[in-house]
Image 1 (spheres, rainbow, N blue to C red):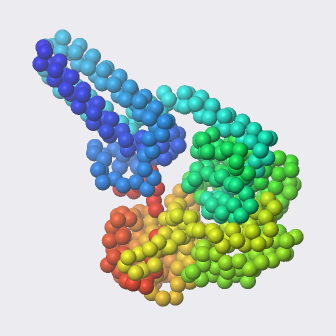
Image 2 (cartoon, rainbow, N blue to C red; image 1 turned 180 degrees about the vertical axis):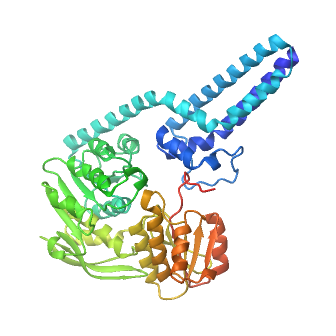
Length: 510
C-alpha cells in the first residue's frame, strides 16, 4: 500500500510540474488577447493545430514576450490551484478504485488522467480566467477610478492639459512627435510604446504623472465600440486628434462605419470648450470633421484652402523630407525632417496642430519637428554590417501604411529593392483582397520578394505572378528567421531591404 501511495504521489508531482510548465504559452496568448475569454476562444479555434500539439516548441520566440504583471501572477496562482484541485480529484478517484480492487492498474488511470490535464491546459485556463474575472474587474476599477481622480486633481490644481490621440493607424507616431514638439515649451508626459488601454493608461497616470507635468499625451486604442469612450472618460482630454480611419481590426469591427463611430467617441467626450483636430486628407475622417460642432482644426497636404495646418513644397527622398509648414493665423516656415515617407509629413502636421493649439510659435514648432526621431519599427533605418540599407517597418501593417512603405523604398535609386513580408492580417473579410492589391504594388517597386508564411501570403504571390513578376525572384519561407537567411543569399552592399509587418505572436498558420 505504501508503494501504491508513493507512486501516486510521484505521478501527481510530475503531472503538476509539467502542467504548470505547459501553461505558460496559453497564458501568454490569453494576455495578448487582453484576458478576454471570448477572444481567447476565437484564438484557440483559429490556431487549433498549433495549440493542441502535445509539446510546444522550446524555440518559440515571441515578438511581444509574456510579461509577468501582477494580474498575470494572480492568474497563474489561481491556475495552479485549479490544476491542484483537478489532480486531487484524480487522486481521490484513483484511491477509491484501489480500495475496491486492490489493483495497481488504477495508477494507469491516474497517468491517463494526468496526461489529459497536461494536454488540456489551454482549456483549463478558461476556467481559471473566469474565476479571476470578478476580482480582476474590481481591482481594475479601483486603479481606473484612482487615475481618473488624479487627472481631475491635476487639472484643477496644476492646470494640466490633456491631449488625446486615436486613429486606425499613426497614433503612436503622432504621440511621440507631439511629445517632441511640445517639449519646446512644456514639461510633458506621454504613455510609453503602445500603452493605450484603460489599465495601461491608469498605470502611467497613477505611477508616473505628477504636478510637474504641464501636458499629458495619451494614446487611445480600441478593438470594439465603447472602448475609446472608456479611456477618454479616464484621461479627460482637452484636445483630441483623429489621425486616420481605415481597415484595421476588421475581423472585430466588421465595417468602416463602426471604426468611424468608435474613433469619434474621443471627440464626443471632449468638453464643450474642447478642441478637435482632424486629418482632413483621410476620406473617412473628413466627414467626422465636417459634422463636428466643437472648435475644429483640420490638417493635411491636399485642398490647402480648407485647412488650418498644412504642408506644401514637399520634397521626399531617402534621407527624409523638406516642406513648408503653414498655419493659418501664424504664417509659413520651412521645415525638414529625418522621417521617411510623405505619410510622416501628415503625422508631423498632427503634432504641429496640437502645438499651435497649445500656444507654440512657428519657430518653436519648426525646432521641434527637426528634433523628431523615427519611432522603432515604424519606417526607421537600422544599421546593417553587410552594407545594405535596412528599413524596419515591422509594426502592425495596414493597406495605407504598406503603400507608404513601398513609396519610401521607391525613392532609393541605387541597388536592388528587396521586401520581406507576411502580408497583412486582422483585415477580416477584405484581407485576401487587400493582400492581392498590395501584391500588385509590390510588383511595381521591388526586385525580390521574400514572403513569410505560405497561407497568409498566398494572395500576394498570386498577384505577383499575375503581374508577370519573375517567379525566380519570389521566395516563400516559414519564418522570419528563414527569411533573413534567404536575404543574406540575395542582398549585397547598396541594396535596400524593407521589413514590412511582423505577424503577432497570437497568429499562427501551421
